[in-house]
Length: 245
Image (cartoon, rainbow, N blue to C red; front, side, top):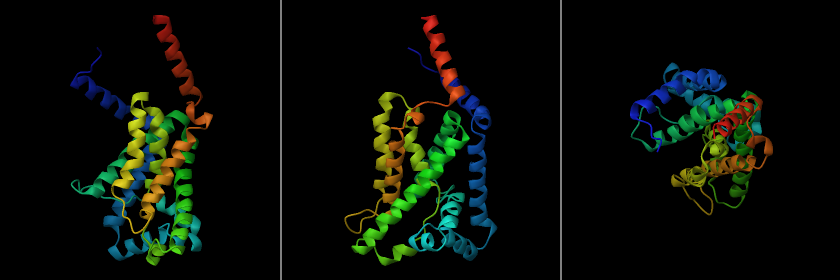
């Protein structure tokens, strides 16, 4: 049985931390940007100005009709959740979206497929999930399932893109862990959902749509293979293992 000692696991974590800037430089820069913007909103400007800015960048129906590109792109420059209130339920969301989604799985996607494809998955998931959620919200408003105030709701952050990356990141797991992971990715948004009718709140709908988009990408052959250099290294490793056998 091959079992790592605590010191061995610690050494592996330290090596991963040292290699992180080389393996995922764009993700690291994005995480730093998110931390800076979070500090700026929370401490660098007045509460009124911060609220006005976030309200303008929210991807609600009114903003998507008035200034869609600014709202779609500006909203992913911030994350919605605490960093220090570790006992709150909102902090769990921060750990899942910023910690797992961006810091871990977006970095994994960048290393596996390269910067361009990782950005396409993350940003594409954010944009597509936001727009599809807007369609669902519009239909729900027409049927009276959501209150009219949802048109101006505060809705910003990285969570839809992170959810897409979490879903496609199932490829990073061993086969035995993939079904539990899929259940987790689909289940965690539902755990905090609010219901005012036949549909959960629109942010839960958005997270579920983002997850479905990520799982749907698994059917694309190009996303099941690593990029050129990583694929060559993987093939070489398999060949080396076969020779040793």
